[in-house]
Length: 293
Image (tube, rainbow, N blue to C red; front, side, top):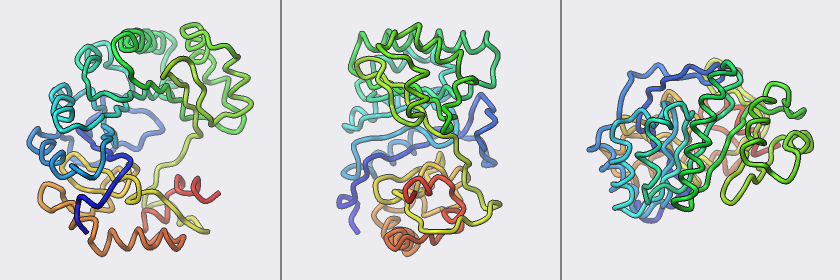
């Protein structure tokens, strides 16, 4: 399998596995804390040429912690990649000016669900910084912005998100009641303006080998329209393998085409084609049930 014959909608790149927060819903990682080197990032870009147009700075860690994030955006732009960034938003007041004008920036997603565990004061301070950045970047260029509330249930979880929703409503003045919209459908994107969305979703449990296997048919888009690359270059099938349990090889040492053609990678793809999860971690992944229910 040649690298230039493989096409992914997105590739998740973990430019750091270090995070400045410790949110209850996030498993974190037991791997050694690292910042991706420029050499590793450059190698990844060379390997991905012809395999995707969209990079997503996200697996574990907070990407805005990386001191070379501006440089990484420039390198991605030079190679004609677009970057989607996922952040907790806590550092946007410090780093926002570094990334706001980068041509490679396509989308930035702010994970707001961690704020329900913070004080009102911390929540307001962070939202003020996020809203300020949004106003600035929307004046400068066309960037998609997602405000994520990934702690919803069928009831919408209005109460614990009430203050966040009130602040969003006050800031963007959508022509409908946000709470009613979420009660009607707690998992569909809600437009807040041109290129700006509130994206609710149900909270999920991260897969780990300590969980019991989940029965029934299994399907996942890992290795079909996405892969992940950890901070040290380890290739994984998707962005939920927080520990690199499904280590398919290292992209700094082995051609991506060879990695994807390996028996282990092909076994995963063929298994899901038959509605089967062949990897123990995939067998214990609650997220994959979204594709079969």
